[in-house]
Length: 245
Image 1 (cartoon, helix red, strand yellow):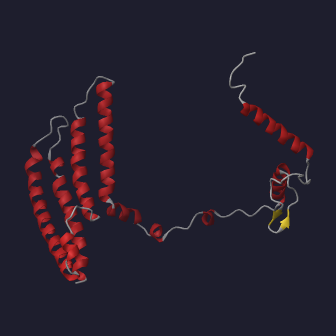
Image 2 (image 1 turned 90 degrees about the vertical axis):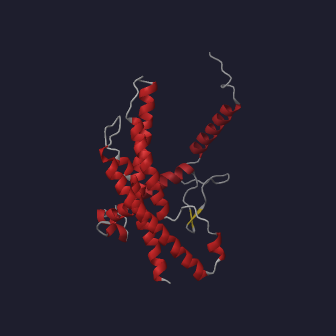
Image 3 (image 1 turned 135 degrees about the vertical axis):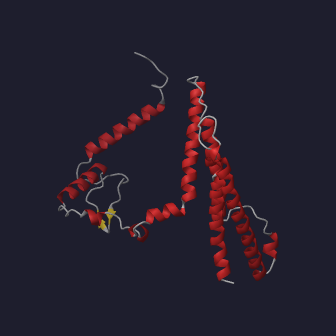
């Protein structure tokens, strides 16, 4: 017989003793008999005395009660489904959500492509011993777009770093005027950036990358696109300030 220190663990003897006690308890107290000791199931249910306090008897009674209950009519599929919200009922709600979260969706996809390209590059270089030359350019392209789209997201949610000590100390009307002037200057700079970014794209449309062989205009196009998006978001922030002056 194989001896093991785990077989002499006192916990096994306690578990075996507990199992034998429960087995003898169930064998002694049958259906509908009360427990002589502290009941494991409450004696009262919904203000009425329970028929049995035995654990096994209780669950057998529950099963028989459900089996004897009349079968309920099937619920139609239309009623079983949860009610739709007004936004889900409106046609084109998903399209509006995609338009409202355009930067977030594209940035998430670009991050996934960038991480996949890095993982593939590492695997091919160190495992297959076959380095890929185009993954670096894919990562560069995705990183540039992620940075500029991130700037657009920060503009949309007003999360750019600002120094607001002067605005916080100024009177309310003056602070509002300073915010209007600040947004107007930002819109002017962004309009200039859109114009210069388009010119940059036109200049680089004939220059191709080394590995992928695609025009570098796709990399520099992030400048005018992100500047245009930031211009739109800044204009959206400016219009309510002008209306409530």
